[in-house]
Image 1 (tube, rainbow, N blue to C red):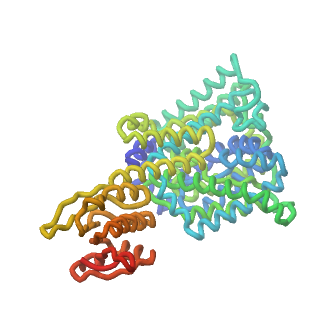
Image 2: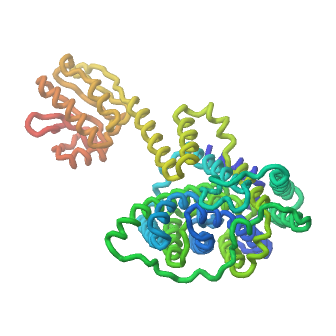
Image 3: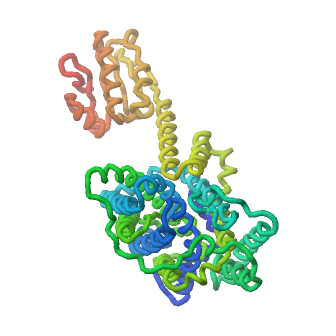
Length: 542
């Protein structure tokens, strides 16, 4: 189902034929596509970085430096070529309280510690746990982020200068109205139309770049009075200077920054690894989760020492890169370097670009990112999966990605445990010798242990009871305790119980729990058949 989803997403994005553009060969045509894709991404990064800097309560250059450094380092050594990283809103909203209460220097120190934690996660190979994220959670993640990207663009429909400290520009300030609003909407629609039509005419220039170029040229030529990048803030600056965070190296400082660093590291890795999976599915090539953790960590450590606000993978810009044909590390490197060129030399030109063009690009990203087929499969998938999709979507929009994913995984895990707990049952029959056999069906673990105990009737069963685990599996300590509880009841009733067909790992669990094991001579495949004895607990054979 996931590959079907990603295939349809790729079709909606009008992706190039991967067989014609192999990632391994950097031909002149491929280099052109990568460089133009990087330019498109860099243009889209500017207003995002500035807006997220406002959200965090720091200078716009702090966001731009983060976009440059994080984007460059992750493009060089990240786990998935084609991914774009930079300053993100998911991290910015967590930084607000820290900056407001302690100042920007503590933010820089927190970003360094955040990077160290991510490096540890990468070295310990904790990134592999992203495999535990179920597909319904992934769908909710995609849909939630599409909605977040859409809502973030609405701030551009406000009077210029009203976006500061407003959370993606959605806070205070007056909305555009009348002719300025209609002009803005018309330019957004024109940008989207160019992006939609361009692949049907030529793929020589990435469609998003063409949309930005056409609308920017029109606005500049006609002298239209519309919001532009320069209305957000000046992006002119120098090279990011090396700067050791000016915070006291004390236990008190660690107590302040550690909670924020842990939260930021978790959010950054979750968003990056989910984006890694998404881009990997779309391009047909898997990425390295642990390598991505290391790249994100290294990027944030460096960024914290160069006056940046830190960052992680950006799904919107990653989708722009994929849509524009970016497949290698060249596109990400080019995007970062183009951004630096904007800051150092081209700020006056970039500041003339109308915001409507960039909003149009992001709206097309929203359309391409949202899993529209999830609206139809909600009626076809199990109710629990449908609930998880909706839950993760809503929590992503209302809270943040990390909380949404954790909630989704917990709900999915509880639903899985409950479904397996209800599977426990037993078929019973009596042998010619007068023994009663219980053939246990389903896994025996903490969720099904009570149901397992309730299956037996020590008072009415014969003197010998055989419990056959050939179609079951003993999973955890709760299962062992349940077996002992059943055995104790039969012992109290003066009856004998035998356990048969326990697998080798169950044998190890029982042995580790301190029970005496005696291998059965007539059960070589399982190497274990034990019975409950009066003196030592579980002993004996068939």
